[in-house]
Amino acid sequence: MANNSFSDLQGKVCVITGGGGVIGTAIAEALSSAGVKIAILDIREEVAVALAENLNKRFNNTCAGLACNVLDKDSLIAAAAKIEAVLGPVDILINGAGGNSPDATTKQEEVNASNMDKLDETFFGLKMDGFQKVFNLNFIGTVLPSMVFGENMVKRGKGTILNISSMNAYKALTKIPAYSAAKASVNNFTEWLAVHFAKTGVRVNAIAPGFFLTNQNRFLLTDEKTGNLTARGNKIIASTPMGKFGEPEDLQGAVLFLVSDISKFVTGICIPVDGGYSAYGGV
Ligand code: NAD
Image 1 (tube, rainbow, N blue to C red):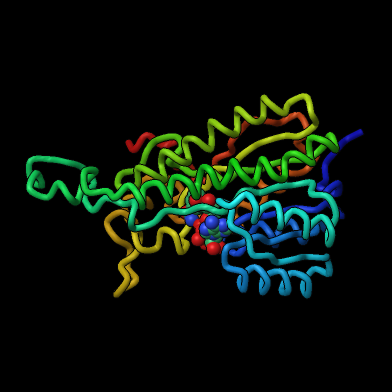
Image 2: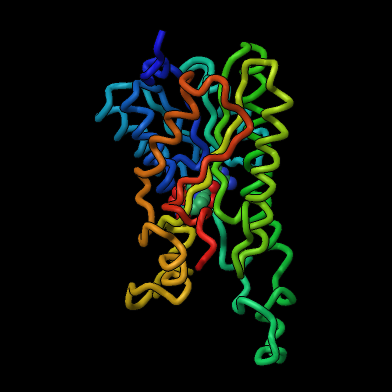
């Protein structure tokens, strides 16, 4: 029998961490339109609740918005209990909470002869507190929800986990070492957990978005005053063969594919959705 639809998603329950963000919202819309019941978890409760209400109105599914901190296991356990009571057992986990911060970003791209007197603007000036926060949010913030929601999936013998990686996982980007290291760890963890769960019926995959203008990177890619692209923003466009930033909706197809049974023999992979960025050598 040919399997050419996402109809298996109808009625399934999906948790999206960081679901109130730009990418989380686009993913929630795609899954809602496929009949999935969604729990939006976000550290910003009001955003999670508002999005869930909006989805309920537009798609006639049951959605819930909850406050949750992906770095706090008790907060995840409490959210899991509420979700199970309101929506039922969780079939899909999307680890979307993440992002970079100015506190974990060097001002200088590299150390060279012209900036030896400004070493505090390079690697040497990074504050470990900021570095650790970004690393933890992106990596531990993927590990902990996988532990909390993955356990019941393994017990039920079915489920999928989808991690959100980044182009940094393949080649580190300048200025953001904590974010780069964390996303490389996310890719490695995706493979590790996929193998660990391979015989349980639970699949683990990732997508690696290319460049999308969102809150986490706007300060790096656009000038706050003029709104024009920074030199870094222009460099990204020049390195993206399609010559543009992605739209959050561009991620929806890869997500639907990876969380649906249509990809039931696929585990441990990361799909770049990047306008060709990762394929391009720059020449
Ligand atoms: P965003 O800032 O719009 O969304 C991130 C969301 O995570 C926010 O709603 C925020 O409130 C929430 N969050 C932050 N800390 C949290 C915590 N401790 N617990 C729970 N929620 C928390 O950013 P986005 O661009 O939508 O990013 C979503 C994911 O996609 C992130 O993992 C990001 O690293 C990744 N990503 C983004 C891009 C891009 O170009 N925007 C590229 C590659 C990967």
